[in-house]
Length: 521
Image 1 (cartoon, one colour):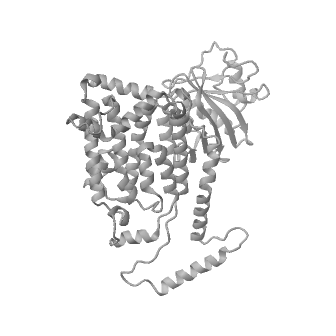
Image 2 (cartoon, one colour):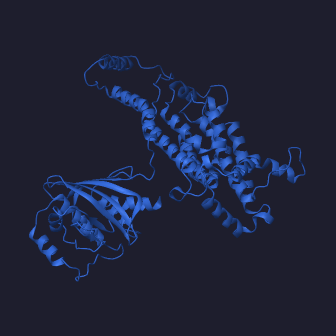
Image 3 (cartoon, one colour):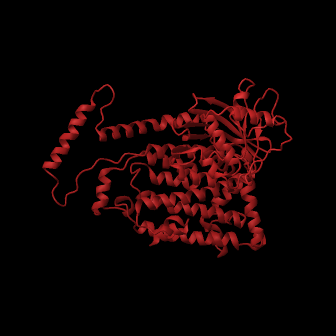
């Protein structure tokens, strides 16, 4: 994934460490004419007219003069002075290949809008693109090559390209993409760019199911947005009465405002369909990658859930039996009423209980958040204690799609609703503090257990560290627990930010311990 992101950043800035344009013989002369840096290469297969361009990320690109055909290419380039979108993009590539950012920016318009779908916000303006170019040039391997498969000309002012990435002469997995560029007709410089990179996860038919699941929520959200703007749908219909009713309500509110101290009734807050779709997609990826993907898929260790080995299943059952160290602790004090604790390596048991205590402490936050008030939160959390993010992600997707009831927000603002504080008023109470104390205790015990308990089995710190490394690289269940802990850290920051805008940053962003402290304080 890190390699994929490195590829994406390079594409986003057009900072190609190498570019290869492959075309038919019919288009080769035109391409050579617009690309002075192109030279023939023995790597081109028969019938390929445009050669390979190589460049080291640490030094300017150099091409030995002994290569045949270079004078002819230079002459052709000199003869053709037409500025097209393709020639601008290739010129920018050549400058980036020399690691000359200033020369590359000479091809960029001051008002450029650069869209890279790996980033949430487009890069607008030359200075933003400059920073992207500079950052994208760092750390790219010498033998990473971007190969242009196809190049289409949109009348001189625009160009589209499809490409893939090679590493050591072989296609890089999940690293294909398409880019579109447009130049300004006056300045003849790049004014718009869009890069679309192949996603690392292929959801297949599941993507259609996700679209069908979230489409109703998206339509409802779009409808509410139109009504808020007072827009009339195409073809008229029943939207005009709603618009008139809204105008009447606004007029009445202006003439007869609410009495002092009375809270006006507000509408339910709509759900976030985009966030819901993202969480559902992440859940589908979690299920496929960690639970369902075949053995050895993309180098993943261990077996999938449908082919789990009996010894792995027995170890999971043993870890669950030692939940929160209850049995091991009782055995240490000579209490065997519940039987002896199953033998589990101390590092494995420490990681397992740390992850379980993390999701355990999330329940008060899940009860306090404003969304998903009608969802079976406690039931979902109870099952997630065993299935972790395999269930948490779909639940969070449903929660994001659900709205926030106006009645509950008013009860919370009033502060007089009876019942459990977390549920009735969305504030910390005895439940939060008790969960924080338990989570803190189990967390401390988990760290102690993983580092020091049972030295006859666990060994010293170096041996335990090596055991943990082998767990993550050889056992898929243990890898899933590590991924779970990382995701729980994200949920911690998200939930605390929703329910307590004044929470200290350490409580939000220090995983586990910050959550325990926030619950107790």
